[in-house]
Image (cartoon, rainbow, N blue to C red; front, side, top):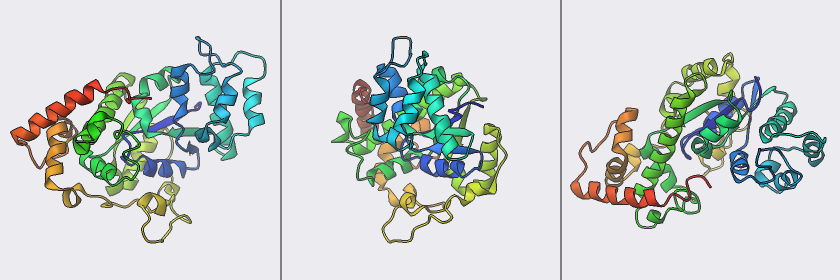
Length: 312
């Protein structure tokens, strides 16, 4: 039972924050804020030797990262981990950092919730072959609806793809498909012992049953505190999102059936209908119009050529 114990991943806007809060409320495991830097620094080799050993340049690099600062690891504690004169592999350093985070939370097990890591499962599995992965999957139409209402969408992926300007809905749908397929493809190779999928819709409809099943996968006993994560934190100011209001598990907060324009639904289904079918999400337009299909194919071809934002 070494750390990182579990990574919670999924296409952004799929409900990973809700699951983070649920799991973090378990008395045996702490889940960090989103990190983003763990696989990226390793892939870029920043502060590392070609063999993945830590150099003197890594600690200053970590200390300047806002996401690292959110862990609350003191500078002197980090320097102790990298400055004892012994060669330290990057994976061992991250494990030691997470151990310190867990100690501060009075919990032995530590997980990480960073949605984007769904595109890094191969790297993370290579660094920690025994780490578990929980992939949150949500209906792509609700994901598209959420991103459409997200004020930062144009600054984030999928807003960085060239097709976003003229076709934001189709681009978002393809971005959702890319994330889900990358996670599932690597998950099949990792195997069911370490890779687990949870549907957002099932989680909010049957929270206790889904949490019990998740705990069985994690090798932990279910605890009622998981569904009381919101107690003492819920806010009632008008205009707050469910995330910032710290609402309890609540079904129906967003519903593409009543909130998404019909044309947008058809765009999403024309672009990613096969994946919706594969996941068992019924379509409104089983046979989108020829113009929608032709446009979806064009966007897919352009999207496939513009792959620079997939990870970095």
